[in-house]
Image (cartoon, rainbow, N blue to C red):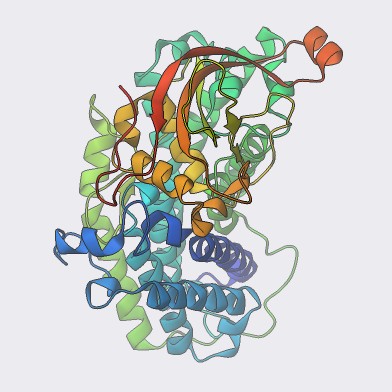
Amino acid sequence: MEWFSAPDYWLSRLVFQRALAALYLVAFVGTALQFRALIGERGMLPVPGYLRRTPMRRAPSIFQLHYSDRFFAGCAWTGAALSAALLGGAADRLPLWTAMLCWALLWALYLSIVNVGQTWYAFGWESLLLEAGFLAVFLGNERVAPPVLVLWLLRWLLFRVEFGAGLIKIRGDACWRRLTCLYHHHETQPMPGPLSWYFHRLPKPLHRVEAAANHVTQLLVPVLLFTPQPLASAAAGLIVATQLWLVLSGNFAWLNWLTIALALPVLDLSALAAPPAPLPAPPLWYTVLVCAATALVLALSYHPVRNLLSRRQAMNRSFDPLHLVNTYGAFGTVGRVRCEVVVEGTDERVPGPGTEWREYGFKGKPGDVRRLPRQYAPYHLRLDWLMWFAALSPAYARPWFGGFVQRLLENDRDTLRLLRSNPFPDAPPVYVRAVLYHYTFTDRRQRRSTGAWWQRRLVREYLPPTGPAPRGRAGGAGS
């Protein structure tokens, strides 16, 4: 069975599995801490209502069989505990079949969450975590050598992530072809980080170098993943370096970290350490399962490949409800203007021109112009991300924004936990409104003189002053 096994990649497999378990842990903990306000029984988009109109075949999930907030929380914390155990190396101390069941359970639990998460879980990195997690089921543990077929499937996944992102850019916004997109991106990206101001203030020739390097890394380097060593390792190393640059420049949940993790099994680390003991031949049942999984992935790759070749390439799309083989991509269009929805409340009974409106503070999205953007990735602040989409168009926010406002009018504890600051700690506001501001980074002179990272200009009212309303009648964002 020499064709089946790659014992030299045992260390590459180990670091990949540990990294994947760490990202699973972040995902499950983030879900456990945020779900009640977002999709809980009293959330903005409640799971029970979604399940009543969505059949199992469209959204396979354990919650199709039973849902309660307590049960959902139990599943999320179970996933977190199992992730922590795998991060600590528990799978390598178990029989092979038990280790595979542990990885399969992680995948099934997170699939169940994503398939009922609706808008809050409609991000490409959710599908990417599920696809990588599915392949991890068949990677084995230290009782068998890493299977060559699964190692190649991981390369195929990394190729689609990078190449798909490169194609969507080169086919999309003309600024990518002109190498000018990064004149704007660091300022207008969904959630800037603590270094984004500095990245934005780099000289324009360096921004052009950034864009050109992005094209090389996403359109040319991924092809080298399928070449012999050490060229494949060099290609993976370039991808890791590029992803670390992106980690420094913004917050993209676990997208960059998972892409780095996918590059790890490509690296030939055999020179660093030999296997702890000669690895036995894989059992027949394991060989059959790996071959079957490989055949399934290759068959399901038809639609992603067709999408890659299409002039109407779609970003971040799943072609099956199990998210087994997906298509990826990001920033086919780069915004030139950054707008932010600022949510405010007042305790005055009759709001008017002289009303004092107090602003709610969010953890990640820009608000206070003097507050340095924070680093949260790989943790995912779901409400903050959706607020960025809400600023692009009220249509993005219409299903949930009214419910968010109503929960602020109630000082809902679970909702307030998603925020950094509540200007009404003692009693809820009488009215809440939302206004739209145009945000730009300050220049160096303004930064020195004012201490502000941002400057903002009022654009228009986004949601007029709104008081409490009966549940089920909360309005959406303004048009």
